[in-house]
Length: 241
Image 1 (tube, rainbow, N blue to C red):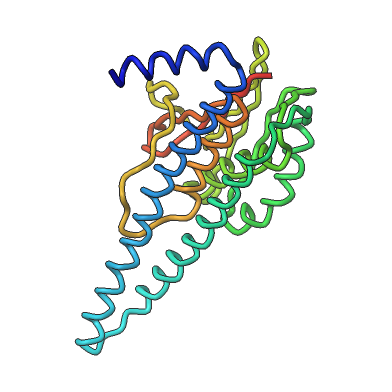
Image 2 (tube, rainbow, N blue to C red):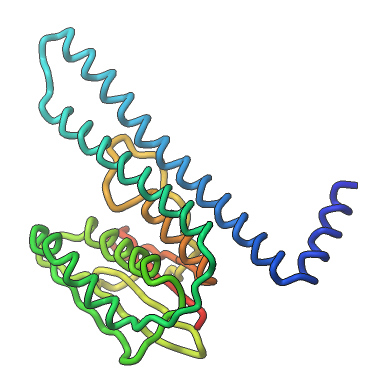
């Protein structure tokens, strides 16, 4: 009976495009909340684990300085993640933007804004964007997505490596690839999935990547990921224009 009702509702949605849009929005938000919940839980579990260890170390009169650094990092992650949650909620409530955005302009802004982070890490940034490439959507959200991917790769980079961004347009689709310029494994790009729980959370992962995935889908796009030869990740954003 329930299956019959769902089938009829699905058929009804196909008759009204605006219902389909709302259905996709709800699905996107639901998936994002599920991913975000998983990753925030991993940070909270990390905090709990290290607080328990601090308690044990206090009993032994041996307070670990490193432990406090991990706690500070985890707290900083929670603050960032909560801010990201708010940003996604706001974007869902915002009417869909159909404005054209020049990708080259966005990349120039992102390059300037992330320069200090690259300098500190001693990592280079290389952009190869086809001239005149256009994206359609909310400029702020597009900027957040691209910046998030750049930083996700940067946080896994080693000194003197290069974060590479390649932008291509093919048959009304724009693809942006983010990696470290190394040879990838034979694995193809697959839809992004949340990683496993980590005892020591790292910045630039988790909710921020889930946010990019949600924002991409809200812009009729997609985030995919593949494993590189050294087990690090390469990312690709694809948008319909």
